[in-house]
Length: 248
Image (cartoon, one colour):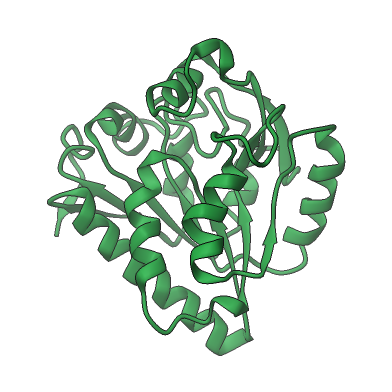
């Protein structure tokens, strides 16, 4: 695992966007299209902003999946990850091939549909973050490292729900859904390359636990250390407690 530390989240975002664009271009050049997984949340704002500014990208040849979605929210809800991705990625660059997780009704048909699509071909690159509780996607601790499913319904723990409230997506904790559809950890690990983008001081304890501690379901993102091609992008704040990082 390659850990890189940048002076601030803006430098981090620029570097991660350059790497992401390079991988996408290579996939389009070699196979005619790029298949990507996009993360959401406040920690991804700057990265997605920089990625959408990269010139000469063949976004029409990009097929996008996303990591997770709340159960019980419609796609136009302010906290919906579908809305987030439309506003911050899809509509800005003109992606036409994308697969949303619809949590507004029975989640099982949505899971079956997107599972069939994601398993048609390898994923070239996954963009992920790390939650304040160490979660990867919505796989809260203790995470399931062994499932054979691509997506599953998960219960959100209180720490995860408080993070969503703290980021400003909801007005009260009672409004934060208690369940979600999440891409599973084994499915994330199938991506050929993973860019883990984790800025901000509020993530420092999770970064330390996941990348300096034991690989454990109690620190779900720690499993990234088993993947052969992971780049972790931190800023000085998120890396403050980490001993293994290499500054850039």
